[in-house]
Length: 350
Image (cartoon, rainbow, N blue to C red):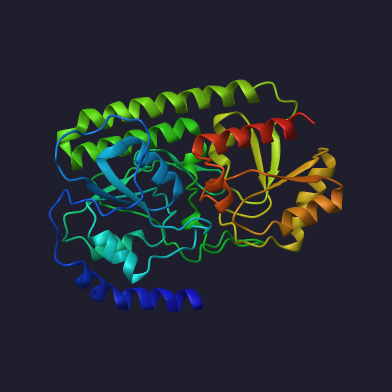
């Protein structure tokens, strides 16, 4: 109910917010002092104004800033420490989007608010980049279908609300049944980076070579990460792992593993008593000694199961956002993915 009121308020406030943003600004627009990249990438020596880019949540921010280098001001919409699945933009966020040159989002149902926002700014000169464009998106049940929206800005997301999977533990607010967590496969992260590169080159053709050079540099690091996962997991004693949130389907598929989720695609889902019992039975039968939970959400479900079977808990990070601790340690996508690899190696070789 609270969420419904939030959505009504957001929709009601949208016209006022867009009026604040004005009818348009010069594009590319001037730098506004937003979070800027400081990496040593190809930079622009001309006096051209920088692109203003908004990104939906942390992986999109990280991939975009790596491609943009010093040619853009990149701002992330979801604040640090906030779980992004149920986040919705405020009127101020909407005004900022309307004033931007580019917005980058994941797609595949991750951002339940995106269609409303894009429809509201459709008359503005806003470049829209869907990072999962062209990637084969899996169903939450493990099935998959082609995810290709065709022309930019055309969306065919399923209803983001009640998506009943039938029996016990029906999945509510479950991304329309689609699994959006493609960034957790380094191989698919590469495709997302390339989609972002292409979009920025279209938004700012003058610097397409710089965007390509930046993307090439980052992709080489992602390719090395992909190889680390392949080598690090290929000889694991076991192939299945239990996780609180069903976020690791793409990672599991890419590296020959089996994800056994306690709950569904949304981290706030509570498993039923029978689901809990089945997970406990599976863990006992397969001698599972580690139950994974994640950052940004409560770990009580994983801890309950671990206590029941005498197992330990460990973090497997879906990298949906950075915590304040992550920021203090200057961790980024690649560093956290390496932590995930180490956690998986430990759990799969007990």
